[in-house]
Length: 170
Image 1 (cartoon, rainbow, N blue to C red):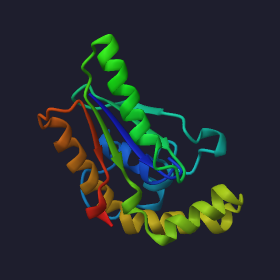
Image 2 (cartoon, rainbow, N blue to C red):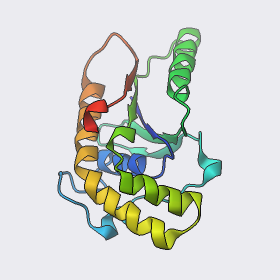
Image 3 (cartoon, rainbow, N blue to C red):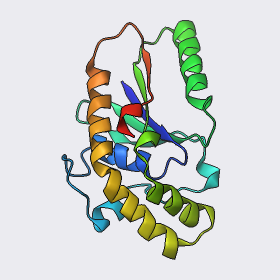
Image 4 (cartoon, rainbow, N blue to C red):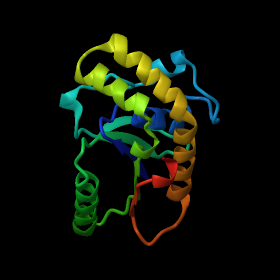
């Protein structure tokens, strides 16, 4: 199975989700420390050239691959990836289950502004503190989103490609 967490930039909420999924962060809804947040792989480290790249984060305890992608505002990226996967499954007869999980609904305003200042304008002295505040605000929601994503992945569906929009985590 393959899990792909997606959001606007692919460097904040998706990085936290992948870290929770891979048990690189405490497995609870408690607020993360500043150090825990800033030590997450890829957190606030990607640039504009990384948009659209599917980044490998690791393999979970069940042997599943965990990835992330920044899709910008384009809502067609994930459906296009689903259609491509179905096309390849039909042509090459592989049956790998893929779960796309949107982390955007978890993102608070502080994280959005922090990402804009830090990644968009290069003003880390303003952006990073806002990102940390935002990450602390949403880490519980991200943890719950990841737990739900993993549960959906374990569930048997008739579909091999599942898209989770996760609107309940707003």
